[in-house]
Length: 492
Image (cartoon, rainbow, N blue to C red; front, side):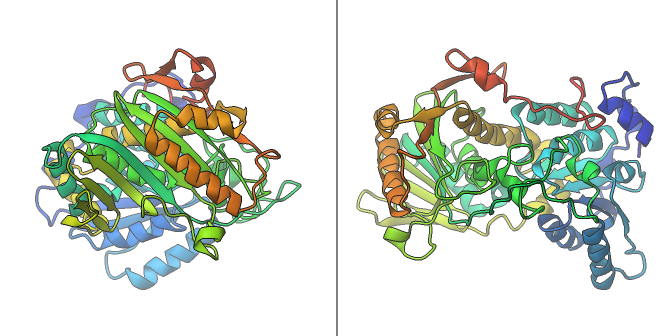
């Protein structure tokens, strides 16, 4: 396996000239691993939550061995190392631990990087891993900006690496079967789509002054390419999801799963070309920055697609802390066709006639075989065998970024203007009406805190940039700044 020194990593990260890796010097993993007995050696980065689950999932695969754990939190790292040794170590199952991903990628006994680090690290870890001759399993959302996603695709292709996204529903039999039926026209032409995640979270709380970084966390390594700005949140871990420097809100946290399903179900080869969005962060006086109600209307050429992401409870209609229900659903995709509707989420779904009677059931398992699919593709060496190749994952993640950008360039607006913006799409208008009822149930004063509504943005799929009205402001968010030496170069 080709080896890259930390010195070379840093020089590439800051954009210095460095000799490119010759593909001939990278071991062909497919050739070396045709036999299921040939061992695949895995490193997992970001092991507090999802990453620790991946440790178990990869350990369960035949011929796979987790050999390295990585996390900038030394306390989490020590605890997970002890758990690993207790659960898995026997004979040759030893594992090493490191706080620095560069040390892990510099090892020649690592074939695969699995990253469940925070969003802002996903792209850089993937690019570095591809340059180091490693294959990658990267959690969703795969990128923190549209530009980063394209760099990931280019790195995977340039270094001939297999990169699988953690959008595991690509491996769900329900979604796969429904995709075949929809694309074969079983239910007629698709008329409109409603994609939703109607969750009920709690406020992350509010601090007035910067909080100390816990002494067990190397903040430089945790921040990586992102700014090392003061920590303005009560909980250091997880709540970064709702702050733009590191996270991408619920749109890219949960919404990406169903938007990726939609991309899969309808056989999209690219992203929508128009988007407008409205919403805000209501009812909570906290340090979160991302909207807790986010309504986006996309057009994929002429097909209207409503994306409805809500994190507020619906106390007046649902009672307690339950989230809203719209079109009889809390989450998933509602695809209205000429002759039936397809309603599907992580657990499966069905096709329904005009009277609401189920005429076909789609049985799902949530994508239980997703890791196995990745391992099988490694053994064939064919990216087309991946259920969630990085190109498709880049596109579905880009849809999330488009929705976020469409909201971030918005301005405070009266509800009537929001109604007028969405009135030409019946489903969007009905969804807005439902949102207003939910806000009323949360006693939200729209005069005190209005909607934020963006302009209708047009997206050029070839250049991956916005054009026309609002483009100048929107294009500022296509690429987030990186902090040296944790920089993805323009040419990977």
